[in-house]
Image (cartoon, rainbow, N blue to C red; front, side, top):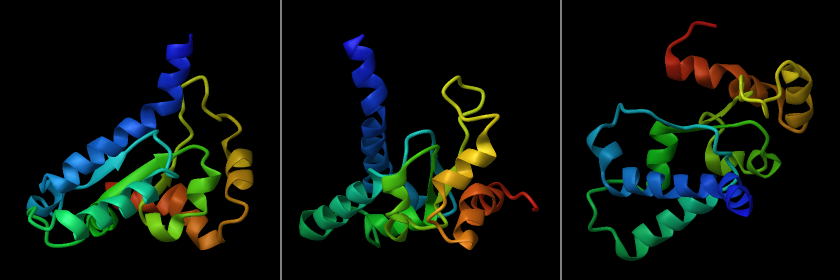
Length: 148
């Protein structure tokens, strides 16, 4: 049971390595129209990773085939979904308000459906309405080419 608790609590951290592999590996440089979505992994950890990647790239990895800072690739081509992440919502200026999408986790048993509307209202209470609209609707619509 302890191992399962560790897995459930930490799987988001494994996503950090994936982001590093994709960005440092030059995948987004080589494919500037490719879009990446990090799903069901929260968002609060991403600003730390991006800041650290930028610092390390500036300090010792400018020989990689990147033409801009790692965080700039994130803002140009990457997105993350989350269900509840109050810390992440306080870091939208670093994450990019255009790069975050809310998800209900339906049909998983730990999802918030059928109470999604009430959950969103509470979760995003401190976020300005135009940004709320991006997070719960427009960002996904723009990414996937839906007309809303």
